[in-house]
Length: 367
Image 1 (cartoon, rainbow, N blue to C red):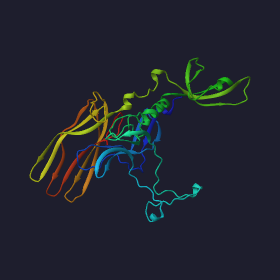
Image 2: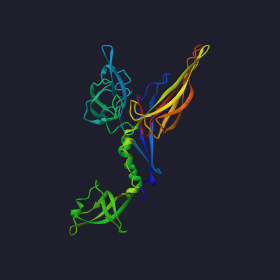
Image 3: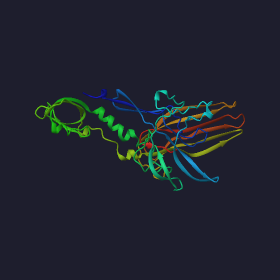
Image 4: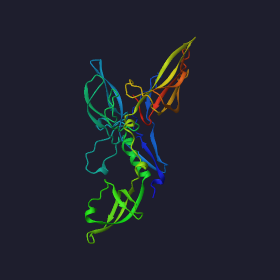
């Protein structure tokens, strides 16, 4: 029988309690930010069965190393912006106070005020900072502080080589496109010991067609009868090669680096005002330092435009508009000579726009 009414709708959840740093605050400049959307949804087949996946990890942030008031280098480190707990009785009046209880009975231990879930990181050994100095590097992504990709797996949802693309997507495609089969078998004791869920099993059923199956459950009773047992086999039939869900290519795992830049910037000033205009351009490159253009990226890049307005009373409002663009070349002009910002010096009225890249399939973004 077909599985999952033809497919699955898989949601990769982000921990809503974790206010992770995913980019710089909107400050009115034209610097590009990046952002992870709340959840990532993937449809396998025609959908039908809802699956929720929780992949606990952290974000990363760049930290400047300063020694004797002198900038030395930049490191990339795991980072979360989330309140912790204070166990010292000195902080008993604090809202974050959670007393430490040394008790072998879990039901008597009070819950933490701020419950921080289990998070996973990958330890990549000693890696280099921006000046070539090595430091112990644990991270949810497979690149370093110089955006050099050296690994083959990321824990951060949305990366091209994340757990979903590497392992879970092929698995759920297999579930969606395979067929569940139940059969009664007569198996010898010798063959019974060879049955494993890790290896396909060849069965010739009533249609006399030899097929390959993956074991899900095998039920039988002992003792045997003349060296044989009657067993109930439950498993999934592997599809022929042309119909099989294939894993993504290695190029997808590497990903293409994308960013927005402002080109042909121009300033128009008048009596008490200043307007800025320019081209908003999407760049697609093969490396994180944007030195090797991607000739034919064929990417759908998600983004949103943030518009900040500061009125004469000092009150600010920010509105957002989400969209996407298909990048077929290394350089794509998103907006030509668009109005970027306005400043009225008398009264302090101000308008700023910023373009923010959101996570998507097949591309990476810099901090």
